[in-house]
Length: 206
Image 1 (spheres, one colour):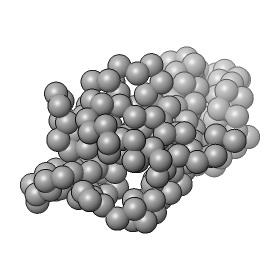
Image 2 (cartoon, one colour):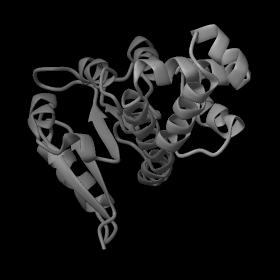
Image 3 (tube, one colour):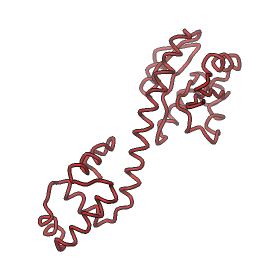
């Protein structure tokens, strides 16, 4: 049963076909694209769990494609292939986050190993991204007052101190605090702090 998918982006039809034969299995669907533009135009391009990208493509190059993907909310792991590798391009590719940079003709076993690594990496990273997306969506449902109360709760203030800081009653603080906990799906300030800290790059900054 197909559980993951991979995109091969290479303008060499023979290479695309050979990679499809090599990589496709009962659990992995492989789709070929003859250009970066064709891949970007695909309606389901964000669903791929791994990308194999040729460096020198007709039209948009592999490096430019990587730069485009870097702006996506989530980009799956990428393996880059090239028939004419050089250090500057390899450095640029690694800076853009590629898992490996392989020269053609590449070793089939090394590619298979890297693809398996990418698929495992995607499972973890995509799940984390989805958790973070859900948290951001939940945070967006909080009212401004609820956000103020939450920030003071995270700062360690007691209800009485929060009431004094915001010039509201303790009862109002308790109501807002309860609503924050309910929306965020937590039962304590410690649990809330852990949840907020889990947001990559936004720890402590709800």
